[in-house]
Image 1 (cartoon, rainbow, N blue to C red):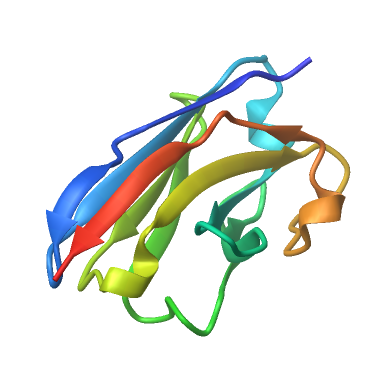
Image 2: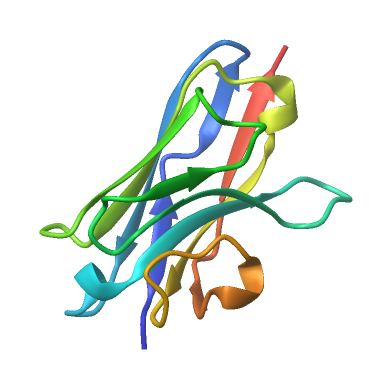
Length: 124
């Protein structure tokens, strides 16, 4: 069983930055692919970013490419999402997820464990 706990969400003005963290339980965190997804009110959950188990490979949604950076620290069992140049349309609940089977994944159905989410609100 893997438990994921997100933190770092909050209210920020457009153009600002936030860094989300996701702390994972389990001694095999370094073998999990990790991802970030988000869900805005009235919309479906969408992919934001993913990182391979070793951190060597990353993928981003086109909407965040160049503004967001996903990273991980396997020694701390933590994955991060650095969000810069935030826009109002980035407002959503952000979820981290762990995939215990693949080296990297971009589809929500590929992930096995999910955190409870953290709210990010970007004001104009």
